[in-house]
Length: 119
Picture 1 (cartoon, one colour):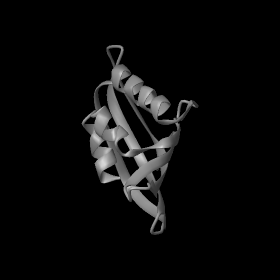
Picture 2: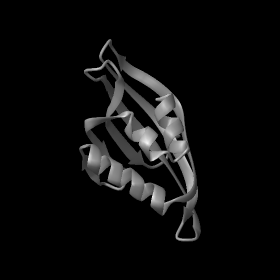
Picture 3: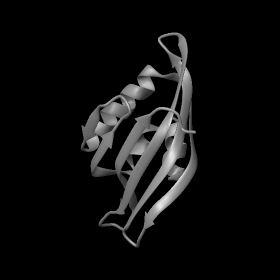
C-alpha cells in the first residue's frame, strides 16, 4: 500500500498500474465502477487530468485480513487540488483487497472508495 499510495501521490500512472491486478475492479466515490486493467487505467488517468496540483493522502491504514496470498485494508483518504480553476477537496474511506499474482507479487485487485466525513 505504501508503494501504491506513493505512485498516486506522484501521479505516476505507469507505477500505479504496475501494482494493480489485470482483473481488478475499482468502485469510486462518484458511484462509477471500473472493471479490468484498461478501465481502471482510464479512470485513474481521467482523475489525474481533472485534478491539478493534487495532494492525495491516506491515513488510519488498518489491515483487517492478512494471509500468505491475500490481504484487505481500510483507510481514511483526503485530497485537495484544483478542478477547472477552482480549489477543491474531499475526504472519505477506502477499502482495498490485495492478492499475490502467479509471480508472487502483491497486486491491488479491488478498491472501493466512499465519499464523506472520515471522523
